[in-house]
Length: 385
Image (cartoon, rainbow, N blue to C red; front, side, top):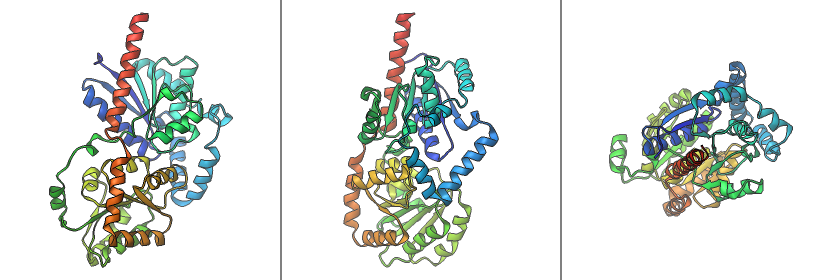
C-alpha cells in the first residue's frame, strides 16, 4: 500500500496497558504492512532517569497503598482545561528531544497510547511545528481530560461513550473513530479449547474460573479468594495467574496442596488468550486492556476493588452492559462467587452480553484507519509537491 511505511509509536510503562496497546498496534501494522519500519519508544526514556524512576515509583505505590488518594487526584484533574497551567507545563516536557528524533526518523505516522506524550506532540501540531499526522489511542472505556487536545489528527477509542466525552470537550466527531481498544490479534482467533484444558491438566466437564492475581493485588486477599474457590462445595477449577508477584505464587503452595478443587498456579504468562478461552469467568482488576481482552473472548468479568479513576470507569462500563459485576470488598466478592457457582445460567447470560459488547477486530480496524490516513496525506503531499 505504502512504499516503506515508517511509523513512530510512543507508549509508557506507567501501567502495563499503554505498552500492550502499542504492541498490539505494531503487531497489526506488521500484518498489513510487513515491510513497515516501526520504532517503539517509551516516553519515560525522554525524561531525566531519576525523575522517571521517581514518578513511576510514586504512581505504583500510590495505586497500591493509597488508591483513594490517587482517585482524588484523578478526579480533581479530570476536568482540567487543555490550556490549563498544568497542561501547558506538561506540554513542554521533552518537546525538543521529540522533535529531533522525529526529524531524523521522518515517520509517515506517529501513534501515541499515552496521554502526556500525545498532548506534547498535539501542541506541536497545533503550532505547525510538527508536520506528521498524530494518532492517539485511548486505552480505557472513559477519558480523562489529559487525553484531550485539538491538535490530535485522529482518536481511536473504545466505545461510543468515550467519543461522546471527547465531543463534549470540543473535539470534532469526524476525528474520532470507535474501533475498540487495540489488543493483540491473538485474542481474535479460534483456539482448541479441549487441547488447552488437557495441557493444563484440568477436566473439560467442570467450570474454570480465572483469577488474575498479579496486578497490584494484595497478597492476603488474593490468597483468600483462591482458598474460597479451592474449598467450594460446588465443583470448580481455578487458574491463578500471579504475574511477577513471586510472593503470591509461593504463598499459594499450601492452598494448592490442600485444595479440594483443582488449582493451577502460574507466574508471568504469555498465553492469556488461551487461559481466557477455556474459562467461564474471570476475577480481575479493571485495566482497559484486560477488559477488552476478556470481552473479545466473550468472558464475563467479576471486577474486584477497581482502582478509583480510570478503572472505576472501565468497571462501570462492564457493569452497565451486563457483562460483569463489581465487588468492592471481599464480602461482596464472596457473595458473587457463591451466586455464580450455584447459578451457572447467570454466567451464560453475562457471556452473551460480553459477546455483543464490542465490534471485534479492534486492532485491524484501528490499523486500517491509520493506514488510510497515511495514504491520504501522502497523496496530498505529492499533489502539492
